[in-house]
Length: 258
Image (cartoon, rainbow, N blue to C red; front, side, top):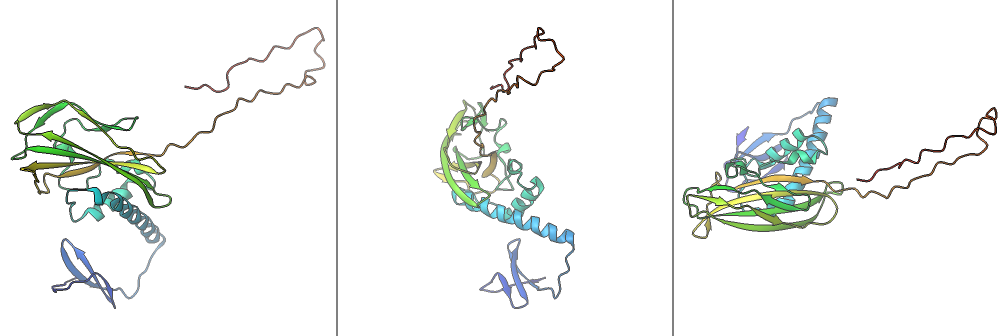
């Protein structure tokens, strides 16, 4: 591996040289002459490619709404998170941090939850002052992604400001609403920023943005029809005397609705 020390660095392939960025430095490596792949390596490459495409789609849908600076290894962390969650396991994305240095659990003892009616509920709890911060801003970012067509079908945001001038104070809780109708999987991200004198404290150890909920699209159920069994009057046993009656059908409900 060679380090590229130039005024005009480049990324990508140039002849048999590949330039790429690693840990903030531009590096060079040569293209291998031959690449030998087994069935396992082909399978792993296919899975990694699918995870990379899904990760890029998620970043494209959410990154432009973030006000914090994600860490430099966001791409690799998100791809690894998707691979570990498994194929089509979108719920496995919950708790992913867009800032690998800080998470929401640093600030909230009781985590926010998304209710069935679409509200983001933050439970009442004691809030602690953090350094010179005067207020905290919470931003909900909800985006709906159709992974089958690789499209972002909608995005909505909401903002909440919390006063931090007191060293310790009781936060009465709050509800934040976002509305993103349409087709696809709904990803809900909660971002946290600290401010002083109307300026955000730009420290990677203070800002946080986590995926707190993933809501799959509810498939529409067609109404069920109760089919009454057909009784053949000529299907009874001929050996039964005509004076003997056959027990009636038990009229139980075939489908119970909750």
